[in-house]
Amino acid sequence: MSIPKRGHETDAGIDLTAMSVEQKRPDVFFFDTGISIHLSDGYYVEIVPRSSIIKTDFFLANSVGIIDPDYRGRIFLPFRYVGKADGMQAAEELLQQRIAQMLVRKLEPCRIEVVDSLENTIRGTGGFGSTGS
Image (cartoon, helix red, strand yellow):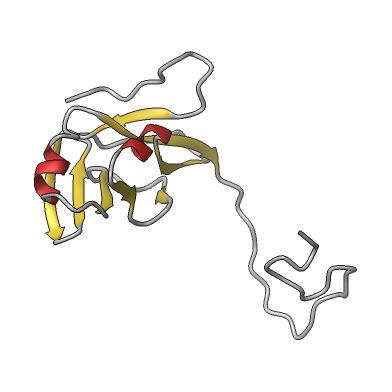
């Protein structure tokens, strides 16, 4: 087991290490971090790839992972392989490496309300680049 830790005291992310790997599809690999967590009340975790993952042919398959406060299972990291070589061999080269990080976030409870209409704003309904380049 590799205990998650920050690289530096001021780092936001807590590094996660790939301890074992299982191939789920030809291009998808689940890395086992070897850990489960219990969060303090009022918090959850976001999982993001470490920036150094760009040096490999892997990227986090679900973009951002969410670990809910009541989840007690093992943390697995799904990565997609986009390289041309043997994916399992490439995955095995990542074992014992820090490949992702946990960001501990405050959970902000909110109420969902269904309405018939929304108030108008200057931006309105424009999306995807509607505020200029």
